Image (cartoon, rainbow, N blue to C red; front, side, top):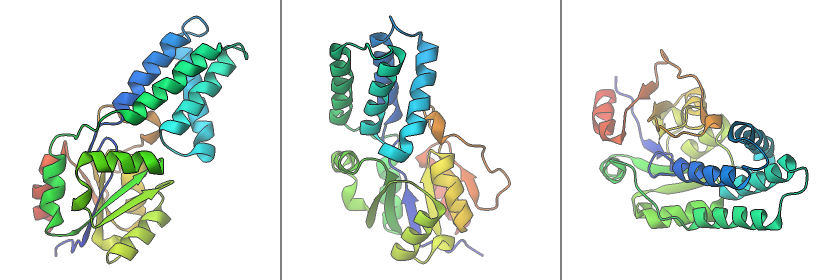
Amino acid sequence: MGAGLTVIGFDADDTLWQNEQFFQLTQDRFAALLADHADRHHLTERLLEAERRNLGRYGFGIKGFVLSMIETAIEVTEDRVPASVIRQIIEAGQEMLRHPIELLPHAREAVERVAGRYRVALITKGDLLDQERKLAQSGLGDLFDAVEIVSNKTPAVYAEIFSRIGDGPERAMMIGNSLRSDVLPVLETGGWGVFVPHELTWVLENAEPPHGHVRFREMSDLGGLDDLLDQLE
């Protein structure tokens, strides 16, 4: 019996287009700015602690990242961080918000090919304005039947989306680079979760692959999506 899929969901950042590389480049710049106050390893740890602590306050995205960098800079300098450094941190964040979109290999082809066979949704988390900007610049917007920008990806969020735009999570598939956000919550709802690894996935998105789960699949890139769907259907 086939999977009976009616909805295919795609993650956005680091699944359809590059994202994490810009965070890492900015973090390198941040480390250089604070080099006189903290070594790189210590600074990275403090920044990650701030990001984890602030997720509930600011959510995911560039703005929360910038605020976490500023908070970390204040902490590691014991309130003595120069205003010029704060300014440069803000400017680095603004540059991230202006950076052009770079699609990942096979992204356009993958979405185009499934658009004629299934209802297709973009399901992403992060800052609303920034995600809307990236989608507009990607040129993929017209291919999606639904665009869902959410504050977090939980089983309840997926269940609601797949029930509203499709026939429930059992007949839906989610494709993404984050095991924690794109795969595990969908499997919990009874849907299909497809992991497409990205070499720069943010550490807070990592989790153990659920090998052995009947509805878990992994692809090296989006070029394998047609074959995967043919096997399931």
